Image (cartoon, rainbow, N blue to C red; front, side, top):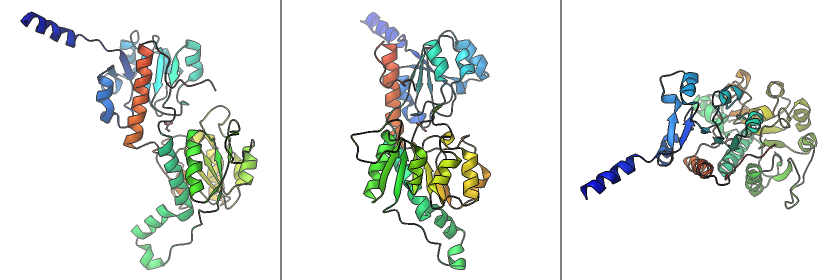
Length: 333
Ligand SMILES: O=CC(=O)O
């Protein structure tokens, strides 16, 4: 008996979990870390005293899987240091931080969080939209700075109900924004990679035409070669002086320099921005404007979203290590 129990102990201790590299922990990782460590041997690059390239060189021959987040680029330089890599599991929905062309060339699979965060991101889009029109953040600052008593009533905002809202990217996030804003009495139309005939919202294949026919644009699409700087000077001009722009997609979908110029010259009414062209760097002009609401790329930041995101990541890693089909592979764009 004694022999078999010590054999059991040895067996328990000798279970070898598949290795997963993490360079920087994803947000809220500590909440879900044990879910990962029960199944995988997590290589924590951020805890190593070695410089990253030395750390990676040490593990180069064994690392087949990497778990990453939006702010950790998995670019060609990093991929070169990982010759045995077979899968990149991103806990983000957007996969623009992964060099997908290089992954494709090397036969490395890429997965993302797909729709895990859509509802929470849609909530923030709606929050920014309301905030810009009703000046909630600016009014909060007005009260805190003691201006209410010295300067009197705060300037008027603009009504939400009846606004014509153009959604750019009617995927899962965009659709959730549309449903929410319909309930506020807004009129929805959209631009997307393709029309969704099952929905009754008017579709505009041309984003400029969408802008010309709406009071606000809400950017919900992914950053791809096709969408980079899609919201340019022409689109912003079409949106017009009373127009508002909200972005919960990726900063570089908008030509940020043009956006700043339009805001400075009051060529559009305002903007609500959760993402920036060079996250986490925010143009200083924007910081000074009270018709702009700024948010630090946090639309997905709820415990519930990160729980769901970590479940999707674990499901993809398990599928990969047991040779099953991946749960949320990123399709070629
Ligand atoms: O921006 C966050 C994400 O893409 O998940």
